[in-house]
Structure formats: structure tokens, C-alpha cells
Amino acid sequence: MKKMLKSKLASYIEGLIAEKIASGYSFTASASLLYSFDAFLMAEGLDSGYLDERAVREWELLKPTENLNTRNSRVSIVRMLAKYMTSLGAEVCYPLSHCSEEHAVPYIPDRDELHKLFCYIDSSRSKNLCFSRFDIEYPIIVRLYYCCGLRLNEVVVLRRSDVNLETGNLYIRHSKGDKDRLVFIADDFLALIRSYDAKMEAEYVKDREWFFPGFYVTRHFSKSAIDVKFMQWWMDAFPNWEGKRPTVHALRHAFVVHRVNDWVEEGNELSAIMPYLSRYLGHSSIEETMYYYHQLDAHTNAVKNFMTKCSSVVKGVSQCR
Image (cartoon, rainbow, N blue to C red; front, top):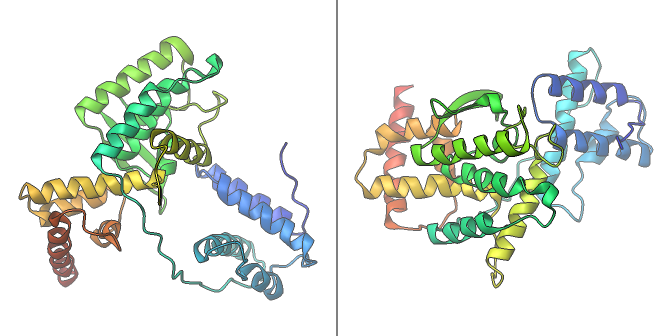
């Protein structure tokens, strides 16, 4: 059942959500935070009808159960609401900018671990025959994260019309920074995707809108559903695992780390490759791509060489500006 907004800011919140969805954004997680803000205003007696300083400052307070990154996500959504309200002529108090001091260091699975994980997912079967189509969806979904280095949301919101099975490319819409881009698929992986699409059309969902239909065929998978499923896969594939586990997003990190390691060891010139890799990933600069090595231990000597060479690349680019 759909949640109801109850505060005096409900019309603004509804307007912002409608605008983002109409623009093509997947706004489910952000909308959930806005609903939480609405409930917060009511529960704390801050429902004045204005986005005033008292409400904003109370919302900014760090909860005992959350880290800085989580708090900052909450605050950024209210900042978005403030901008929207300003565009409509309302006077608002803007949240302060809070820099996070916490940088989660992801666990990057190696190739052997990924091979074991993929084999487990390939062999898994749904207990409910009604959802046997998931058995052919999941292996392709998880490989897209690693083989193409896609972000979590970029895979689940793919429409069938965004996947060109002839030329072998994906059209990524409204990604981070509201940027579109083309992502090309390797030939061997493209063959798997073509086989998957043909089977989905013939046996499961004819003329589907979403390339990966979720629980309801008229909707795509949610990010949280894939997050939870990935955790289950990892725990089942590695029942004796101890320590930090990778997340879905760690597969994007692995895509960068493994490929750059290979390129460096093969003697490729990074100054020529890095701009293409950055564009492929949807980054606006080489520095963003280098961040995938930030705080990571060196997996191989190639990583050390990569960091040294890329530093010179970045300096060279900066001098040319």
C-alpha cells in the first residue's frame, strides 16, 4: 500500500518526486528518505509548513545507529527538496554541507572467487517454479556488473530497447550526474545476452519493457532486491567466509582493478587508455577512475605502477587545461 504524506510540505515533496520520475530517474530510495523526512516533521512537532532552520538542523543530527555517509545521504535529499522549493519561490533554510570522514574500503574479490560465485549462481534454481525465469536472469545481471563495470542501478533499469543485440552495446540513461552513455559488450558475453533474450521472449515474457523484469513483469528489479540477493549468493557460495564481504558495487571496482592490472602487465600505455576507461565507466575525469584504487592495498605490483603512472597522467592533463 502506498505511503501517505502528512506534513504541510507534502505538496512540495510530491512535486519533487513526480518531477524526478517524469525525468526518467529511478527515485525509489530517495523518495523513501523524503517520506521519512515527512514523518520526522510530524513526530518531532516541526511541521510549521516551512523548511525552516529548526527542522533542518534537527534533521542534520547524526543518529547513534548511523554512520556519517548515511547521515549525509539523508541531508542531501533535503537539500534537493530545498532547491526544488526555491525554484517555486519558497523561502527555505538550506542544510549545511557535511563532509564525510568515513571511506568504506571495499573488498575486491579476485578472479578465482568470482569464478566460484558465478558457478554457484549459474547452478542455483528457484524453489518456486513460477519464478524460474530468475534462474536465467540472475547470471546475466551479475555478469553485467563485473564484465561491463556498471553501477547497481544502471543494470536494473535497463529497458529492452536500451540493449542493441545487433551492434552489442547498452544505452545507459540518466546515470550519475544525469549523463547518458554507450557501453559496448565483449563478443563472448554478447552471445550469452542474445541467448538469454531469445529464451525470455520465447518462454517467459513476450515483448517485455524491462530487460530484466522483476517480481512483477511490468516492473524492473529494485536495487535493494539485488543487494540482498547478492549477499545471499556470497554467503551460500562461501559458507565459511570470515571478514568483510563484497557488495554488488565491488564488482565494478573489480572490473577496473582487474583490467588495469592486465593492461599494465601487458605493457600498455596508460596515458592512452585511461581517458577511454573513464568515459566507459561514466566518469568525468581520470581522477574519478583512480579513486577506485583509493585506500586499497596493492593486489599486484601492477597497481603500484598504475598509481605512479596515472599520477603523471593527471598532472599532464591538469597542465593542459
